[in-house]
View 1 (cartoon, rainbow, N blue to C red):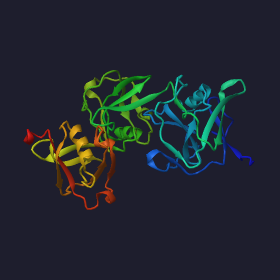
View 2 (cartoon, helix red, strand yellow):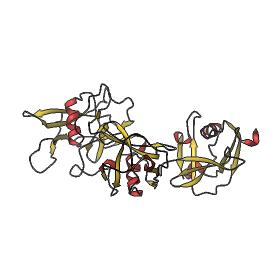
View 3 (cartoon, rainbow, N blue to C red):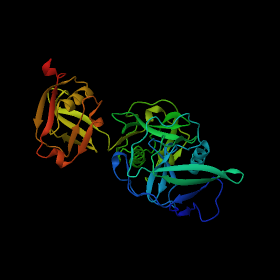
Length: 364
């Protein structure tokens, strides 16, 4: 049996300080890993510039599924032998306080696909008598995790979300601290600040940064005022901001991100008939009719409050881009269907889709 060669990745050139972790990492780890529906993982900077851990699949850097940085890739940690001591160590390493006790892991795990199905197991033990001196060993198993992936919530958990918009990528900016949701004042709020929110929520980039409660007034405390982001922050909480404020909720800040989609029917008798147009990446686009069947029409008509489809229409493509949807028919909106933007293989020789819904005034 081959003995795995190990090497030490130190977190500083000096002796370990309390609260920091040393990593003992085996070198024989398969390189071909895919993550979810996004395809290959993107290479990340090395440990000299990045934390060895991160928490993902949540809108907070201090809550989520544990991933370990290894050979330029982020790999999920197995929860089989996970302990609260290990959770505390990861939270401290991320400057997120200590771990909160959770009776069960996350209910919905992310989709991971491994060619050889390895599992990274992390165990944390004391070095000497001080608990904060923690050694984390990463071992590779050729079998999958028998249980769930490691998932933790730290006391420093701070989240961001968008509320009262047309999708999760548009709305009033709301932030949570110590599990209390509040809003952000629009004083000094601009596109750079909004861009950080969009990137944090995996919503692309900002195309609008409205203020003056454009998405209705929020409730609760106003957590941040005079936000000033540089643009390279991974979280809105990392930006400079004032914690005291002189604002009311009529000044709540908002965001519209490029991944936000909304739809309209144009050129008909009313909003329930006409050419299908989708607002995406900051402009209005047409929809290909190559897969514009009853399922897709039903989803759109119902999401617009227009009942069910009555007649299919066809137009010429006249707008900037082309969107294609493939639905099952039960989705709440077209964004929940399979969709492709400006993919000519699915829009080849298509026309622009249209529909008359039975809520159209001309039919009543």
